[in-house]
Image (cartoon, rainbow, N blue to C red; front, side):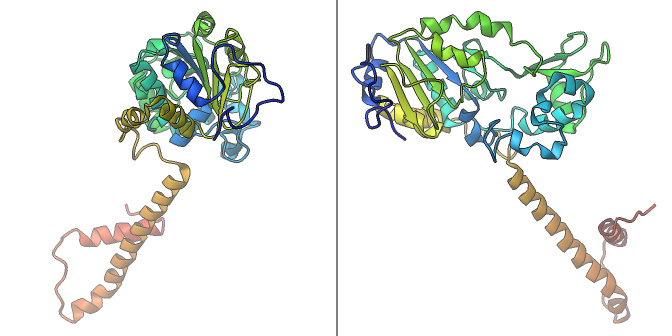
Length: 359
């Protein structure tokens, strides 16, 4: 983790116009000044990976790298509108893993909430569909979901709205939801390939030009038109990049500050420089328990499933041994179990383990 104070961005960076220098100390001084009242944030999947939600493009852990089990013709097909119309089951298999309510916001999401609490968060632009900003407490009117979200759903044929509670029940049961009016497929308000971006995104882009500070976090800035927002920032307005690597030309301006590394550690560094670290940790602590026991990684779910099956096998074997030894024990005069249904239970367990059927 570092910033421009310790690592040059290029051999001859232009001098800052607004900051004293390109360090976190200078950034913190600016944030506390009366000149910084409108902070705009631009974020991507990197702010949610520590919550257990994969990003899209990481070579081994990204979403696209782990879709072989869905037997897709190409990875992006899971978000392709034409493919969705042909085989919606693929998307809803994935949606079951990503659906909101399963994950706890990260400390980066809590950093957004802290900025809001301090009256500094002017607008938050996100490429994410996980709604974790909302879960963390960021107000909906401050959020611009450039690629949509699971927050709404509608029929792809007639455009009719679909009840959110029923949508959740369908996703949890693995059922493809259909419109009660026309029978068409229902899709969450996520932008698929072939969809237009929400009008609200284009209507809100102008606020980037009004910002006093722009913070970019957890994004590759590879997907347009979202990627172009960083260039809408006025000259002389500081831009902060909190990211694993330098992206989108950030660092080329005199007032750019780079904090390279994991987003969660980066926001802690910024908060520490501002004297807010204790407050930030407190805001994040308030989200404890959200999504616990539900939004678990595939390895954890698999481990728990193996443990459960192991317990069942052990119980079955114990009962099977009792079942086999029972005739001898009865002949020897030992008391039979008092539970009248024990024989039936044993038979069911034994037959379940051998995949037979009891009429």
